[in-house]
Image (tube, rainbow, N blue to C red; front, side, top):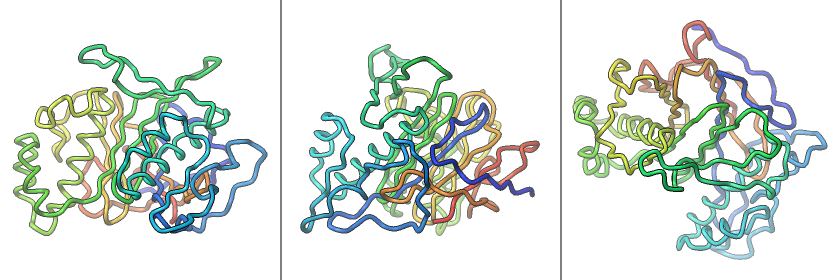
Length: 311
């Protein structure tokens, strides 16, 4: 098995080449505590995108439960963040959307606060609630993204084609049992056949593949999760789609979905809290329990190369 060594990132991320996908992971700060330090060196460079305005650079918390308000978010995003009752949920939402703006601002060479987001038409009813998109001034090749966050982890995927990403904290055995009935019958059979100690992780992989696919499709969960098979048998998955598991640590599952051919290269980076860009190191093997179409590191000749960064 070949292992690809990704080059060190530029101070500002460059657009993914055709066939490439960038995935960024970040842990939201705990309310009342400073953001966690991932020990990644600060990149140098004059770009506005390399001077973050995220939670790590907002004012320090002033008391228990206080969530600092990061600059750069729109008034609608700030209202949405304030609508969450739990401080942890407010922090996660604010961190996720700040990270998204920082990253897309870097890719597009625009100030994060100047970005405008729209919704593409829904593929089912043509209403304005399909995939989110960023308005790109001045033309240029398209840049697609997808955002997901679950308890304790945020994922942003960026690609030159439509993409969906999902991340989920592994559920309790009781939640797995209650939610299994929403899966495709073939997925239910696979889950039932998994050893009891592996069912939480197996369900997490099934569900993140499904949500990533439905996000990329543009329907979200308005299309019933039981409709499409996204289990271990690659031949039974939706035709002309590639769905891959991603490394996301022992407590979470993550996946991406893209239409068309399987990506040649997927790079997974950890985004340190308050810093815009991470450092690549190779991801050198299969994640525990990964399926044959999932997180294996391969040469471009035999499949996608997936690298990840140190934490």
